[in-house]
Amino acid sequence: MTEYLFETYTEEETKRLASKLAILLSPGDVVTLEGDLGVGKTTFTKGGLGGAGLGVRRTINSPTFTIVKEYMGEIPLYHMDVYRIENSEEDIGFEEYFNGEGVTIVEWASFIKEFLPEKRLDIEITRKDEYIRKIVFKPIGSYFDEICKELY
Image (cartoon, rainbow, N blue to C red; front, side, top):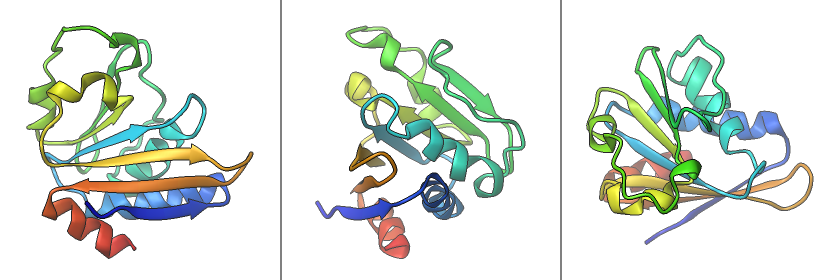
């Protein structure tokens, strides 16, 4: 599997990278985000997938306590934070979102890997220092590999 490495030096650069990705996404696409607490997963989602990316006009914030937040835009955005359901066998209707009419973003996706679709884009964000982020795109499937090539 090919991986695509990006480095961003400001929060705005992280948001721009996410925005460029969002423009290439289609209904039914699933993107997972992994990384330590506070590394920028929600910033990535806010910056690009809301606003210009998918046309969401509402403020995007972390769905930590609600698990899923739905935002209507040009393409619906389903934003999941599954951190609180670690070690749970409960399926909260993931397939309905993954096969729905929107783009699904899943933070802490490793906690629900048995429910994830085979084709998706896995993204890992790590902190190099206070501002610099290493962002690795790991496409699963040729469709997402083509998206990554376009961004790279």
